[in-house]
Amino acid sequence: MTKGVAGRIDYDKWNKTASDLTKQLDEEEEQDKKEAASALGLDGKHARSQAEADELAKMNDAQKTKKMLEQYKKREDGVVETLSGLLAPGQNQETKFVTRAMLGVGKRVITICDTSGPGRIVLTQDLSNLESATPANTALQPKVYADDAENNAKMSQPTVHRGLIKLNLRNLSQCTVVVKCKVITGTVEVSHCKDFTLIVEGDDATVSTIQADLC
Image: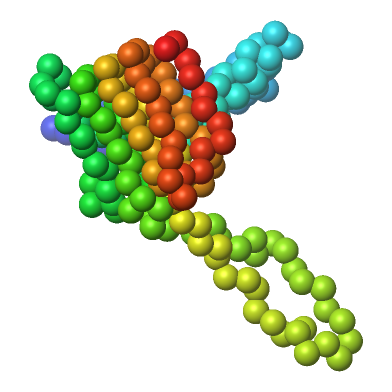
């Protein structure tokens, strides 16, 4: 017989016991629901049909693409120097010289944008002294020949390139841009420009491709 309090049943103890049993039953029921959902593919981890499987695959691909674009933009922001408003609009003809001193650490791509003349913007020969290193491909293993003195030769060091990697010109008007420096990729991209002239001159200047859009 259950021990009572002052000749009565200990209802507090029974209430606690009943509460514990109810909680245990609720937890077991919730676990059973999860296991049943997983078995039926209703837990969100498994597709219930081919159409849903295709939709999940598309969503995963979209997330991977978004992540790749975010990583690309982060890398791009690390090397691009944006120079805007280099000329004073409506003033007399002026010349603005772009040198290494105007670039941040590690910046190897220049974007000149949102500038109105009249005037000239000169990318000086000084920019040809910018350095970019291409790491050696460590996945490549040199061949080994018997009794060859070069068998123990170290892998090649990173290759150093000098000059701008690329030049972007965007939203320029009533001005002339003069390129006197080396452009490693040989590419200049021009967009949304009007009353605009591009001149490539000098011994260092190397521009082989000009891509113009909406000009």
